[in-house]
Length: 318
Image 1 (cartoon, helix red, strand yellow):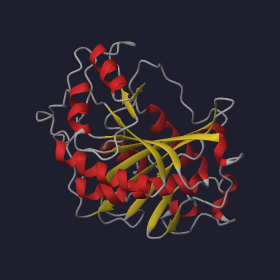
Image 2 (cartoon, rainbow, N blue to C red; image 1 turned 90 degrees about the horizontal axis):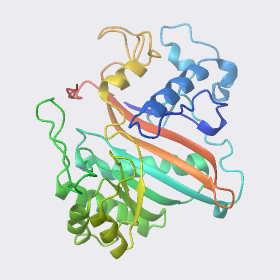
Image 3 (tube, helix red, strand yellow; image 1 turned 30 degrees about the vertical axis):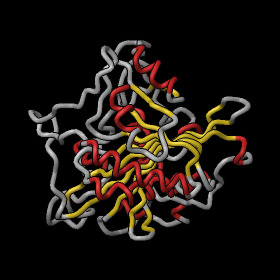
């Protein structure tokens, strides 16, 4: 079963779910706290218009009162895509989307995952296209000190091996198709140093317009990357996102029956109080709509997809 998690618009939260953090701290605290706040707020019928006046069911599955099932997926909380999106004409906005492919998920799923994520953002904002899609591949880190492409060696902690080059190229083909369809205006990558960029560009039909990197040392961009990106007309941007933004353990805690969970997952293998099976997060997408002439962020939020099923192989994590 698919579970689609959402934060709604963080800019309309009144400060409840928008978590400020130091710009130097690489963290997923904004995502986790925004999801938790939206889940908690939606459990009150008066705050969840998608409930249409329904009350808490008398059976043990209390989450049914504030979630909804559409097209075979459980939306957490319920989503009403008929609600207004952006307030001004589409041409007044720059819409940037960052898609995080998560560790342990086969590259064969990424074509469907990419389309699912983009479709959700388009429906949420009521638009036909986005201006920039940045993709983050698991296991690829950027070393600001020497512009080497440091691929995370995680063999000792039980996590997944880093993305291999062929899988990156295969994924990029899907993105190029979406661009050709007019749903994306520009593509970008994350954590690519100059060596990886040079190798990557020789295999692409559409080169990235943006390279988004995390700087471990404040504001120090390697000269080699500056020169190469200028040569190839690639804009350099910085970020402080996690590489593995939604780990399995965090997802279980958010959706589980415990004190910090919201009771979506069953409390035990034989219990009838929630969804049965192992949970595995598949992807996370972050979207931001900025009003061009004012530089104001009008809409910002996240969607995430998790699968629940008995066939899911759990990943080990530290």
